[in-house]
Image (cartoon, rainbow, N blue to C red; front, side, top):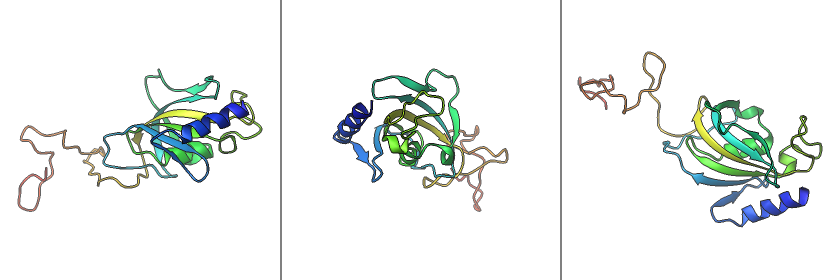
Amino acid sequence: IEKAGKSMLETMSSTEGVTTLPSGVRVHILEKGESAGARPSAASAVKVHYHGTLPDGTIFDSTLGEEKPLTLAVGQLIPGFKEGLLQMREGDTAMIGIPSELAYGEEGSVDGRVPGGAAIFFKVQLMEILSAKIGGGPTLLGADGKELKTSNKNSDGSVGLWGADGKPLF
């Protein structure tokens, strides 16, 4: 499984659009989100759907098919998953290839689903960054603490924010 993983990582590196990070983690953005460019930070909490596989195609973990995405603390993830996720923007879907040493190492995962020395691959959809975003446009919050969006307009076409001139801001 070690040879197959290294081979898949090398193949992934030669694929157009794949970024190989200095650590050896590979990131291929498959679909770009509609976000204004916000990225997670190591302190972020995020909502994701993901599908984790071994080089032979065995699924070792997946939220696909689940109704709700999983909320994760980025800082608590295995190093390679964290590095890959930090390259994504809100709404992106990516394939992340993680060398063994940045996954579960020679010991493998505690539950035994990932054998020692295995590279792993995640298809990840970054649904939402819940906290500690980097970049993107400013976020305006309403009195209820929810983000004001220009798609949530009042009957008069405004979003309820008024400028000093008495006219709607949006």
